[in-house]
Amino acid sequence: MFTLFRYGLIPIVIYCVVVIAAGIDVYSTNVVQKSTWPQTVVTVMQSQDFGQAVAEFRGTQNTFPDPRGTVKYVIDGETYTWQGRGRDIGVTVMNPGDQINIYYNPKNPREISTLVLLGASTGNIILAVALAFLAFYVWFFWLRGFLRRSGPDDFNGDMAGSFADRVPERLSSQMELSRSTLGDQRPTATNSRLAGKSFGRGRGATFGKR
Image (cartoon, rainbow, N blue to C red; front, top):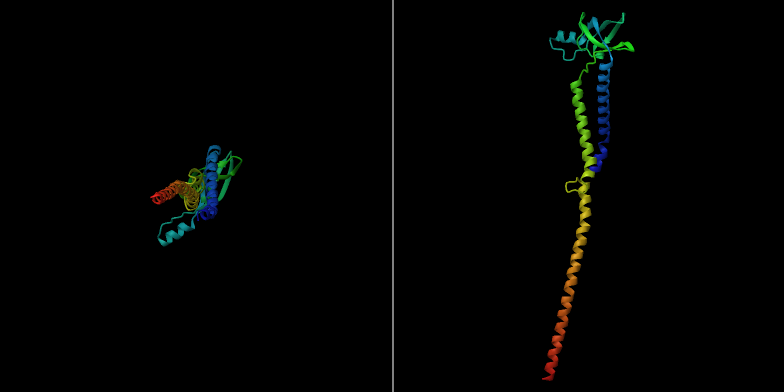
């Protein structure tokens, strides 16, 4: 059972490794871009959010704003226009006339972003769970066996292995003890028999003489 879980959980381990690697890549890339990309201000020219329109029609609150629109900005005297989904550049609110601070790629000014990690809280929870599971797996199924080899608290196979190792030792010790006991008893029994025979012979000789 121990070996089954050790190797059966490998797909989940691989998934956790991928999640952790992706999280590290996203955070490191975000930090590098914030430190190397210059900033500018964009102006929202037009936007629309179908989810917001549906929520207003139903009289409910829009729990997942997803605006799409067009923004304009100027870099080194040249005007650029960007059009698309607001979440692609880290924006969830786009109203015509709004001005938004964004970062842009100096090598490609058309690549812009607020560098705000949307859904970071959910991502942090997933990343923390993946790290916790991976740490537990490595410790329980691999490190623990090396640190506590043949220990009394080993799980299943370890317990069976330690018990199997101890049984021959106990049997050999009991056999040696029984052999030593028999060895001590045999001279005593032999001496008692010899003494009985000599005593019988003595009495018979005396009786005959009488």
